[in-house]
Length: 258
Image 1 (cartoon, rainbow, N blue to C red):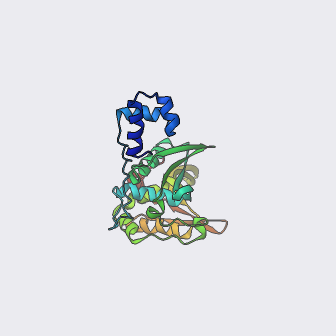
Image 2: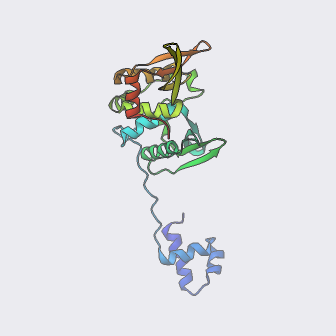
Image 3: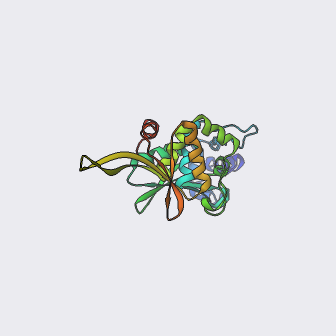
Protein backbone atom coordinates (compact mmCIF):
# COMPACT_ATOMS: atom_id res chain seq x y z
CA UNK A 1 0.00 0.00 0.00
CA UNK A 2 1.57 3.28 -1.16
CA UNK A 3 0.79 6.59 0.53
CA UNK A 4 -0.71 9.53 -1.33
CA UNK A 5 2.64 11.39 -1.43
CA UNK A 6 4.33 8.54 -3.29
CA UNK A 7 1.43 8.37 -5.71
CA UNK A 8 1.57 12.12 -6.43
CA UNK A 9 5.33 11.99 -6.97
CA UNK A 10 5.01 9.17 -9.52
CA UNK A 11 2.21 10.94 -11.38
CA UNK A 12 4.21 14.19 -11.40
CA UNK A 13 7.05 12.37 -13.18
CA UNK A 14 4.60 10.94 -15.71
CA UNK A 15 3.17 14.44 -16.31
CA UNK A 16 6.69 15.57 -17.28
CA UNK A 17 6.49 13.25 -20.27
CA UNK A 18 8.34 10.36 -18.72
CA UNK A 19 7.32 6.84 -19.75
CA UNK A 20 5.65 4.50 -17.29
CA UNK A 21 8.64 2.16 -17.55
CA UNK A 22 11.17 4.83 -16.59
CA UNK A 23 9.04 6.08 -13.71
CA UNK A 24 8.60 2.50 -12.54
CA UNK A 25 12.37 1.93 -12.57
CA UNK A 26 13.03 5.14 -10.65
CA UNK A 27 10.34 4.70 -7.99
CA UNK A 28 10.18 0.92 -7.75
CA UNK A 29 6.43 1.03 -8.32
CA UNK A 30 4.90 -1.25 -10.92
CA UNK A 31 3.61 0.25 -14.17
CA UNK A 32 0.17 -1.24 -13.49
CA UNK A 33 -0.05 0.60 -10.16
CA UNK A 34 1.01 3.92 -11.68
CA UNK A 35 -1.49 3.44 -14.50
CA UNK A 36 -4.29 2.79 -11.98
CA UNK A 37 -3.39 5.95 -10.02
CA UNK A 38 -4.25 8.01 -13.09
CA UNK A 39 -7.84 6.91 -12.57
CA UNK A 40 -7.93 6.93 -8.76
CA UNK A 41 -5.32 8.63 -6.62
CA UNK A 42 -6.72 7.90 -3.16
CA UNK A 43 -6.20 4.34 -1.87
CA UNK A 44 -9.30 2.26 -1.39
CA UNK A 45 -10.38 1.91 2.21
CA UNK A 46 -10.27 -1.70 3.41
CA UNK A 47 -13.73 -3.20 3.87
CA UNK A 48 -15.01 -3.01 7.40
CA UNK A 49 -15.57 -6.42 8.86
CA UNK A 50 -18.55 -7.18 11.03
CA UNK A 51 -17.46 -6.81 14.67
CA UNK A 52 -17.60 -9.87 16.87
CA UNK A 53 -20.69 -9.64 19.10
CA UNK A 54 -18.79 -11.15 22.02
CA UNK A 55 -15.74 -8.85 21.69
CA UNK A 56 -17.61 -5.56 21.59
CA UNK A 57 -17.42 -3.13 24.50
CA UNK A 58 -20.84 -4.40 25.55
CA UNK A 59 -20.94 -8.11 24.65
CA UNK A 60 -24.14 -9.21 22.96
CA UNK A 61 -25.64 -12.37 21.54
CA UNK A 62 -25.05 -13.35 17.89
CA UNK A 63 -27.37 -11.59 15.46
CA UNK A 64 -29.17 -14.82 14.43
CA UNK A 65 -29.68 -16.81 17.67
CA UNK A 66 -31.58 -19.76 16.07
CA UNK A 67 -28.81 -20.24 13.49
CA UNK A 68 -26.21 -19.99 16.25
CA UNK A 69 -28.02 -22.61 18.36
CA UNK A 70 -28.02 -24.94 15.33
CA UNK A 71 -24.33 -24.27 14.60
CA UNK A 72 -23.47 -24.87 18.27
CA UNK A 73 -25.07 -28.31 18.05
CA UNK A 74 -23.11 -29.08 14.88
CA UNK A 75 -19.86 -27.91 16.48
CA UNK A 76 -20.33 -29.98 19.64
CA UNK A 77 -20.95 -33.05 17.49
CA UNK A 78 -18.68 -33.02 14.45
CA UNK A 79 -16.93 -29.66 14.65
CA UNK A 80 -13.56 -28.35 15.74
CA UNK A 81 -11.82 -24.99 16.04
CA UNK A 82 -8.16 -25.03 14.96
CA UNK A 83 -5.54 -22.28 15.12
CA UNK A 84 -4.00 -20.96 11.91
CA UNK A 85 -1.26 -18.38 11.18
CA UNK A 86 -1.65 -14.68 12.09
CA UNK A 87 -4.10 -15.26 14.92
CA UNK A 88 -6.81 -16.74 12.70
CA UNK A 89 -8.86 -19.79 13.60
CA UNK A 90 -10.68 -22.26 11.37
CA UNK A 91 -14.07 -23.68 12.27
CA UNK A 92 -14.57 -27.03 10.54
CA UNK A 93 -17.67 -29.21 10.60
CA UNK A 94 -17.46 -32.62 8.89
CA UNK A 95 -20.65 -33.35 6.91
CA UNK A 96 -21.34 -36.59 5.08
CA UNK A 97 -21.80 -36.42 1.31
CA UNK A 98 -24.98 -38.44 1.82
CA UNK A 99 -26.75 -35.34 3.18
CA UNK A 100 -26.31 -32.39 0.75
CA UNK A 101 -29.09 -30.43 2.48
CA UNK A 102 -27.22 -30.71 5.77
CA UNK A 103 -24.05 -29.39 4.10
CA UNK A 104 -25.96 -26.36 2.80
CA UNK A 105 -27.60 -25.74 6.18
CA UNK A 106 -24.24 -25.89 7.93
CA UNK A 107 -22.67 -23.43 5.48
CA UNK A 108 -25.59 -21.02 5.88
CA UNK A 109 -25.33 -21.16 9.68
CA UNK A 110 -21.61 -20.33 9.48
CA UNK A 111 -22.32 -17.39 7.18
CA UNK A 112 -24.87 -16.04 9.63
CA UNK A 113 -22.30 -16.18 12.44
CA UNK A 114 -19.49 -14.45 10.50
CA UNK A 115 -21.12 -12.83 7.43
CA UNK A 116 -17.90 -11.12 6.26
CA UNK A 117 -15.86 -14.33 6.17
CA UNK A 118 -15.88 -16.77 3.30
CA UNK A 119 -17.34 -20.24 3.87
CA UNK A 120 -15.84 -22.98 1.74
CA UNK A 121 -16.15 -26.74 1.43
CA UNK A 122 -13.12 -29.02 1.46
CA UNK A 123 -13.83 -32.44 -0.11
CA UNK A 124 -12.71 -35.48 1.81
CA UNK A 125 -13.42 -39.16 1.26
CA UNK A 126 -17.14 -39.57 1.83
CA UNK A 127 -17.60 -36.12 3.39
CA UNK A 128 -16.97 -32.42 3.13
CA UNK A 129 -15.38 -30.17 5.74
CA UNK A 130 -17.51 -27.05 5.80
CA UNK A 131 -14.93 -24.46 6.85
CA UNK A 132 -14.74 -20.77 7.71
CA UNK A 133 -11.82 -18.73 9.06
CA UNK A 134 -12.14 -15.95 11.63
CA UNK A 135 -10.20 -14.56 14.57
CA UNK A 136 -13.34 -14.78 16.66
CA UNK A 137 -14.38 -18.45 16.63
CA UNK A 138 -12.94 -18.97 20.16
CA UNK A 139 -15.15 -16.06 21.29
CA UNK A 140 -18.23 -17.65 19.75
CA UNK A 141 -17.30 -21.19 20.82
CA UNK A 142 -15.54 -20.91 24.21
CA UNK A 143 -15.68 -24.72 24.46
CA UNK A 144 -12.63 -24.67 22.17
CA UNK A 145 -9.54 -26.09 23.81
CA UNK A 146 -6.70 -28.58 23.44
CA UNK A 147 -7.53 -32.26 23.14
CA UNK A 148 -10.66 -34.16 22.23
CA UNK A 149 -13.99 -32.84 23.46
CA UNK A 150 -14.87 -36.07 25.26
CA UNK A 151 -11.61 -35.89 27.23
CA UNK A 152 -12.26 -32.45 28.75
CA UNK A 153 -15.10 -30.61 30.41
CA UNK A 154 -17.74 -29.15 28.11
CA UNK A 155 -20.09 -26.56 29.62
CA UNK A 156 -22.11 -23.75 28.09
CA UNK A 157 -21.52 -20.14 29.03
CA UNK A 158 -24.55 -18.29 30.49
CA UNK A 159 -25.15 -16.43 27.21
CA UNK A 160 -25.09 -19.75 25.31
CA UNK A 161 -27.49 -21.30 27.82
CA UNK A 162 -29.82 -18.36 27.24
CA UNK A 163 -29.78 -18.91 23.47
CA UNK A 164 -30.30 -22.68 23.80
CA UNK A 165 -33.14 -22.05 26.25
CA UNK A 166 -34.84 -19.74 23.76
CA UNK A 167 -34.19 -21.97 20.72
CA UNK A 168 -33.95 -25.54 22.03
CA UNK A 169 -35.18 -27.27 18.90
CA UNK A 170 -32.49 -25.61 16.75
CA UNK A 171 -29.88 -26.86 19.21
CA UNK A 172 -31.31 -30.40 19.20
CA UNK A 173 -31.48 -30.37 15.40
CA UNK A 174 -27.80 -29.43 15.21
CA UNK A 175 -26.83 -32.25 17.58
CA UNK A 176 -28.92 -34.80 15.64
CA UNK A 177 -27.56 -33.57 12.31
CA UNK A 178 -24.01 -34.03 13.59
CA UNK A 179 -24.01 -37.10 15.82
CA UNK A 180 -27.55 -38.43 15.47
CA UNK A 181 -29.88 -40.16 13.06
CA UNK A 182 -33.49 -41.19 12.46
CA UNK A 183 -33.82 -44.85 11.60
CA UNK A 184 -36.56 -47.44 11.18
CA UNK A 185 -36.42 -50.23 13.76
CA UNK A 186 -38.31 -53.47 13.50
CA UNK A 187 -39.41 -56.24 15.80
CA UNK A 188 -41.57 -59.35 15.64
CA UNK A 189 -44.52 -60.45 17.71
CA UNK A 190 -46.45 -63.69 17.79
CA UNK A 191 -50.15 -62.98 17.48
CA UNK A 192 -52.59 -65.85 17.20
CA UNK A 193 -49.73 -68.23 16.56
CA UNK A 194 -48.46 -66.12 13.66
CA UNK A 195 -45.24 -64.13 13.74
CA UNK A 196 -45.73 -60.61 12.51
CA UNK A 197 -43.13 -57.95 11.80
CA UNK A 198 -43.59 -54.42 13.06
CA UNK A 199 -41.57 -51.36 12.04
CA UNK A 200 -41.31 -48.10 13.93
CA UNK A 201 -39.17 -44.93 13.69
CA UNK A 202 -36.53 -44.13 16.27
CA UNK A 203 -33.96 -41.39 16.89
CA UNK A 204 -30.43 -42.00 18.13
CA UNK A 205 -27.78 -39.60 19.39
CA UNK A 206 -24.27 -40.97 19.95
CA UNK A 207 -21.41 -39.09 21.58
CA UNK A 208 -18.55 -40.15 23.84
CA UNK A 209 -18.69 -36.97 25.91
CA UNK A 210 -20.78 -37.32 29.07
CA UNK A 211 -21.16 -33.54 29.13
CA UNK A 212 -22.43 -33.25 25.55
CA UNK A 213 -24.88 -36.13 26.03
CA UNK A 214 -26.19 -34.39 29.15
CA UNK A 215 -26.66 -31.14 27.25
CA UNK A 216 -28.72 -33.13 24.75
CA UNK A 217 -30.83 -35.00 27.31
CA UNK A 218 -31.36 -31.93 29.51
CA UNK A 219 -32.74 -30.11 26.48
CA UNK A 220 -34.98 -33.07 25.63
CA UNK A 221 -36.30 -33.04 29.20
CA UNK A 222 -37.27 -29.38 28.88
CA UNK A 223 -39.04 -30.15 25.61
CA UNK A 224 -40.98 -33.09 27.04
CA UNK A 225 -39.20 -35.68 24.90
CA UNK A 226 -38.76 -39.07 26.58
CA UNK A 227 -35.40 -40.78 26.08
CA UNK A 228 -33.41 -43.78 27.30
CA UNK A 229 -29.76 -44.81 27.47
CA UNK A 230 -28.63 -47.63 25.21
CA UNK A 231 -25.52 -49.36 26.51
CA UNK A 232 -23.03 -50.87 24.07
CA UNK A 233 -20.00 -52.75 25.34
CA UNK A 234 -20.66 -51.27 28.76
CA UNK A 235 -20.62 -47.69 27.42
CA UNK A 236 -23.68 -45.44 27.57
CA UNK A 237 -22.77 -43.54 24.44
CA UNK A 238 -26.19 -43.83 22.77
CA UNK A 239 -29.36 -41.91 23.59
CA UNK A 240 -32.56 -43.34 22.13
CA UNK A 241 -35.91 -41.67 21.51
CA UNK A 242 -38.47 -44.34 20.63
CA UNK A 243 -41.78 -43.47 22.34
CA UNK A 244 -44.40 -42.69 19.72
CA UNK A 245 -45.34 -39.25 21.08
CA UNK A 246 -41.70 -38.26 21.51
CA UNK A 247 -40.80 -39.41 18.01
CA UNK A 248 -43.70 -37.35 16.69
CA UNK A 249 -42.29 -34.28 18.46
CA UNK A 250 -38.84 -34.94 16.98
CA UNK A 251 -40.36 -35.42 13.54
CA UNK A 252 -42.20 -32.12 13.81
CA UNK A 253 -39.13 -30.11 14.80
CA UNK A 254 -36.07 -32.07 13.64
CA UNK A 255 -36.86 -34.75 11.05
CA UNK A 256 -34.44 -37.01 9.20
CA UNK A 257 -31.25 -35.75 7.63
CA UNK A 258 -31.57 -34.74 4.02
